[in-house]
Amino acid sequence: MQLTQKSVVVSGRVRLARNYADLPFSRPGNGECAQLCIGRAVSAMEKACPNRYDLCRLSEISATDQLALVESHLISNDLMKNSATGAALIRDDRKISIMVNEEDHLRIQAMVDGLNLEDAAHEAFIAEEALEKAHGFSFDPQLGYLTSCPTNTGTGLRASLMLHLPMLDHFKQMGTVNQSVAKLGLTLRGIYGEGSDALGSVYQVSNQITLGRSEKDIIEAVTVVGRQLISMENKLRQRYLQNSATELRDRIMRSYGLLRYAVSMDEKELMQHWSHLRLGICMGMLPHSPEQADRLLTTAQDAHVKQYVTKHAPQITLKEGRCHLIQETLAQEETNPFSQADSEG
Amino acid sequence: MICDECGKNLAVFSVTITSGSGTSNRHLCSDCMKKMEATFSQGTFHSFLSSILGMLGTAQQEQDERVCGHCGLHYSEFERTGRLGCAHCYQEFANELKPMLQRIHGSSQHVGRAPLNAAEPGESSVSVASEPTRQQLLEQRIQELRQKMDEAVTAENFEAAAQYRDEIRALTQEAGETSCS
Ligand SMILES: [Zn+2]
Ligand SMILES: [Zn+2]
Image 1 (cartoon, each protein chain N blue to C red):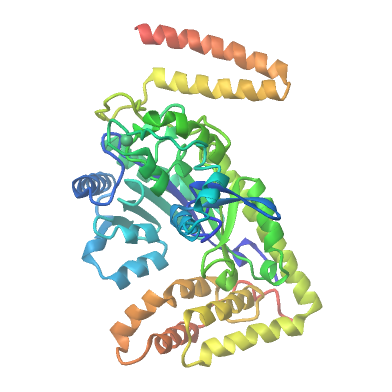
Image 2: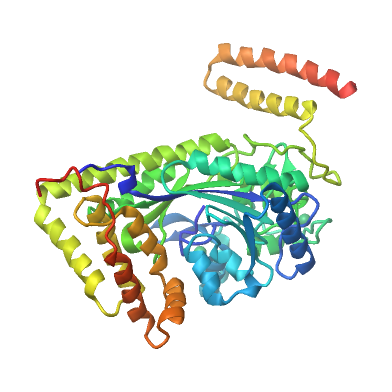
């Protein structure tokens, strides 16, 4: 068994907040301004990358389809709240999305599979330049990019890593980790679930500070902390495997059994077993790839399940549909990059 | 900064809560702030208010309401929503925002990327796409060097600070010449 970054990192993301210099900030009710922003963004991206970006106006799609975009991290909850004027330009590979009329006129976000936030930033800056060439952004030499909320002023950049940290959770390390992360001007929080329980042990580490630190420094800080968390998590996994191999295998296999054979399951239960599924894959115990688990993380969420049920089996419930979908996904075995080294088992 | 209460929204309020066991500092989003205000609205609200240090940066409740001359945003509306109305609000409410930014970010000087055509928020900015002017690049470089110099002085690394000072001098001269031409 070999543990790598991939065994912990689900995805990485860089987001830039930008506002057009000649327009007031987005405000619900200011439809004229909002339409202007959409028009500008569409024509700028069409000129820079013809036929690659698709415009999605939230007012033209159903609430379920909007929520599915949130689940895919292509739009934010806040954009959904502005569904009257909110829109997103989504690149065909779904690696870049430009939200229009969210808190700021533009929220450019680029996603990567691994730890490589520099790549994400590079992609985001290319899109940013294409947009800026058409219409300039609000900028102040002292305060940097001016944003609707002062928490984003400066670089307007938020770099984040989505990490799967089941062992840090299991050994109750998150409190301590949180404190040391906060000292570095970063924040760590659960992505799924309410309040303090992070469903599925999926966390996001990101920068809080956007003013007074360069883009490069911000990205480096998030990457360094990400690396540390990965190494802590991997060490705990190894320790757990050495000390309690049977217990670990039992937990993983029970969850795997439920995922493959249960008939009805809600989102909360899914997340608990999903966590064991991904852990089991990364410990080389299951015949799947981590990407398969990561895909399930999106496609087995409520809105995606609803889309699936509506299309394939309108007579069954969401909970049943979720199980269909999971089992369809897991019926396909995929090469597990973590299992080769583990030949003696 | 993420709200301590809901863990979802951005925190724009910093609240100091004084209780029998001591004081604690919490960062809240506008939604949770409203909720907290509501729970205190019966009777104890006034004493609660007095225990609030207030919105990040503002300690005093101002009687005369301040309004942005460009977009018409009332400062109290910003306090409520955490959202500014336009780029000019940063100047109009500079007295409140500068210390707030300092408290949120621990800095009030931008470092990093600048637009291709950096426009002052005070000027009416009709955006014309262009390469950054040499002048702008120079000014940006000088800003960066000033900050480095300050850091070097703070770290008592006077040799480095002197080097930065000389570099700034040279660039300032150059910038002066460019602006005349
Ligand atoms: Zn909140
Ligand atoms: Zn304003």
